[in-house]
Image 1 (cartoon, helix red, strand yellow):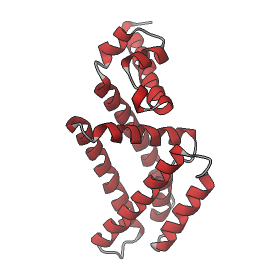
Image 2 (tube, rainbow, N blue to C red):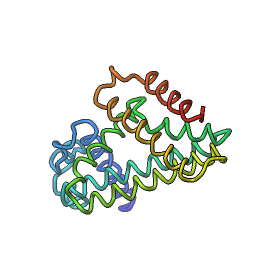
Image 3 (cartoon, rainbow, N blue to C red):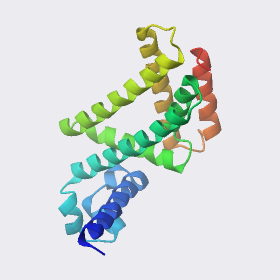
Length: 195
C-alpha cells in the first residue's frame, strides 16, 4: 500500500473515531486520549492530525456539514416537487434513526462547546446560515406566491420545529419515536399551508 493510501486510511480511521467518541460518549469525553483509544492508535498519532480538542470538534462539525450537505443535495435532486423537496430536506434533519440521532448529538455537542469559543461559534454560524438559506429557498419555491419575508419567517419556524424535535429525540428516542416526529413535521407543514 502506498504511503498516501496509508495516510488516507489513517485519516478515515481517525475521523470515524472522532465521530464515535463525540456521538457515543458525549462532549465531555471527547479527548485526544479517547479518540486514540477508539482508533486503536497512539495519542501522538491523533495529535499529529488534531492537536487539541478544538481541532477534534471542528473536524466533527465539518464532517457533519459535509455528510448532511451531500444528503440534502441528493434529496432535492430526487424530489418530484418543491414541496416534496422541502419536506424531504427538513425530514432528514430530525433524529429518525441511529445515524441522524448521532448527527443531532454531534450538532448539539459542537454548539455547547462553541458558545464561548470565537472560532467554533463562527463555524457554527456559517453552517447554520447556509442551512437557513437553503430552507428559505426551498420554502419560497414551495410557495412562490408568498413574499420573501413570509417565506423567511415560515422557514425559520420549520427549522426550529425540526431542530427542536431532533434535540429532544436525540436525548430520549423512546419518548420521541420517528413516527411522532414525522407527524409533527407534517402538522407543521400543513399549518403553514405547505402540505
